[in-house]
Image 1 (cartoon, rainbow, N blue to C red):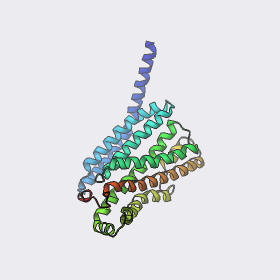
Image 2: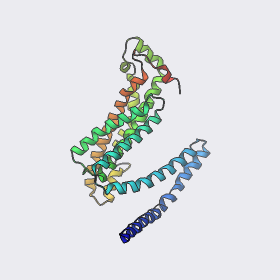
Image 3: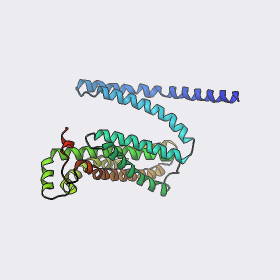
Image 4: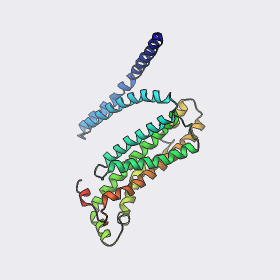
Length: 274
């Protein structure tokens, strides 16, 4: 028993040592970030602190998540997939809500929108049996979908609120003439959705021409056939667009209760802050 425990400890120490050795190159790569910090300082952008904090946080988070995924992938248990997915959605909802901090209940709206949009697409992914329903495959794919939905939803909510604030007189005039909240803010909703979804659509237009997506690159580096990797990447790209579109559109509907009163009047206090 003691010998077994000693072997396990030795293996753990060996794994930790290999990990620390492997982090040497990523640590050296921070030189590029330091260059960006210097450029930000020279241009007086005021982003130096945020850059340093973000790269330190990413370094710490990825280091920890590496050990977590190592454990989860060895479990082959559906429960871990659900826990990981809900954790990612929670963090994404909080982050998107922070971007749209002036939107009432922004974190809840973002979280529900991301959950709805990604869960529907993930359901199709499982039903079509694109990937085996195991943590090793489902968690990375769901992470890509949640990440894209988070970015799009945050931008949509922030842009919608800002546009209504800028054109508040036009919106109030439309409401006074009997328009519903949706009718009064139709142009603002369209503009917010177009702006937030444009990068996703542009990325789909240029995929393979400018950059090779992570999923496809990972499969090829793992020894898969390029043709097989491309087929799976096309499927993933379709699901990414679907999840992002559904989440962003749903967020515009969920924003209304915070933007308007029950009498279809604007909540002016929501639009006071810049």
